[in-house]
Length: 438
Image 1 (cartoon, rainbow, N blue to C red):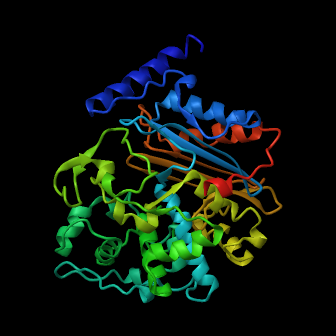
Image 2: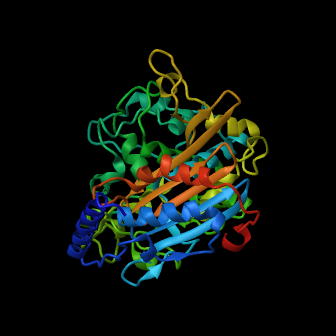
Image 3: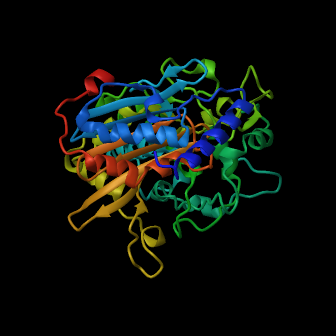
């Protein structure tokens, strides 16, 4: 390592170590790539991925991570890096499960599109007409009439009228919502939607893009209303099981309620909060372990899955005309450019990238090819799932959210780092590890 890089690495290492020691957690001593525990089979042909991940874990002092890569529908790479549990020195296994945060939106969108394919919903349907919920209204308050014009399509595209930067994100105010509803915390997804049905919108639906977790919680309620099943049950049955994906589950807040194989989570800032969950309600706990309403994230950010599960899901769309999950028309809808300024500038120029239905999309050339992806970020988690137009799908998961400088991990590894590693592979293996690791 060059002399001009070593001091910066040491400083990052020191700052991260100091923060973790202050929180009572001993930092793993990843001073060099060779110090990082690595699980899963090695293949010299895929060494660029090993180099990327070991260096990334060291440079950003990541407790644990997993990377999976598929090539034309075959799982060719799945390895774990660092520790799933720092205190117990348990290494991350290749198929360890992590909270995937907003990557959950891709699962929710496919669930909605399956219902549309079956005629149970339409993109143009007004969500109000399907919600089997009574708005919670404060004294003398009235329902914003614009609520009754929001469509399924607008919720999928984040153009439904909610802007967390202009007002707030309801997922961040569970205590306030529970108090207003007169219920014990934490509020569930339906309670959050009920509360927000009594709140004014931030802009006219369909007029612009503003990323909205609430819109996907609303879609979760529509899935339940249209299917007659619980949201999680429907996604398992109709989105995951048809492609032999069986391990994902909705997140549990308290560590003792999580299944074997799920990693521990380490908030980069060591944030804490009042626990929302019995038997520790009101006690001060790590944000990732009951201090935020992760069980209420559900359709917008509540799934737990492995990197292997995510590349399996992404590979379902390697050949859009014959996807095992959606018909060709629904796949086109999923990745279609949204109308208005969500898909183009005010001058009418198409945006280089846009948000489709549950995926960010970047068209590649004039032949209809595209790259699609989604990232996620919550306390103790950063996630990234990528579907490339060349048949390569990747998923990388971390059990912390940012490095010592506050840089989100999925944003740091996306772009040149992870795509550069994929592009550096010249000889792809012919193996398929899905049967072994799903």
